[in-house]
Length: 294
Ligand code: NAP
Image (cartoon, rainbow, N blue to C red):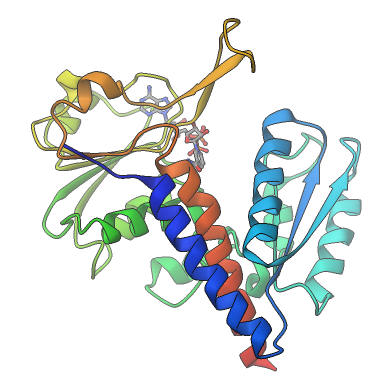
């Protein structure tokens, strides 16, 4: 069994990007600038967005954090998005989800200009991804592809089972694994909460990508020997004995599933760190495209 070490690979990617940024500086070029909008005070969202901004600073990007109160109206948020769309200094930006309930998330994601949509959530970019065109691939699926590629995990002709059909992970992952090329060329089954007898499907899988957010969902008896397991789940479980008051766990019963797996991602330290690295990679790409459009 080999661990797919997202912490290590994400550090490699960040170092590669930092080297490119150094070159840009040496050549007197503008460095990539990522902005992030956060609405409200949700603890987990503030942590995620804070990590993204810190990662930018560490590799030499410029970053801007726009904090808006939880009472922000949809119109106010759309106005801010318009400002970022038209601000030539900013190469890409993200709107941290979830948004407060008075705001229609789909309207907001549609308002981000596709050229600056480094999360890859705009329908134009999602459509391009589905059509194998050059675009921004959503960071978490992009990170999973990168892990499979860097570890040389064979995907061609394999049966990949994706658990969860969210727009940000499961759905794009199912499209990407079925694309022509590497990683891809898999035969894909997309499962969700209405899937019957999910164990019958997972026991036939060569590769399982689990993105549902239910701790310990995937058990050893649900997988076959030598399976490749990608655990996307991140759940905070309350635990008074820890200083933080919680611990982080994934969807997979790691202790037992890892005994049968050929490759497996840990939680934490697997897909999570890859997500931030790929957001940075998309921002670098956005800068490059921005520069060549002028
Ligand atoms: P989501 O929007 O909550 O969707 C969950 C999906 O799982 C839905 O499609 C749901 O089916 C399905 N599901 C729920 N219970 C199920 C069950 N018992 N059997 C089969 N399918 C079931 O989730 P998400 O945003 O994709 O996030 C999933 C997990 O990944 C969460 O733990 C999240 O924190 C984590 N995550 C991690 C990263 C990262 O960077 N590593 C990034 C994003 C998300 P229905 O569609 O039928 O409801």
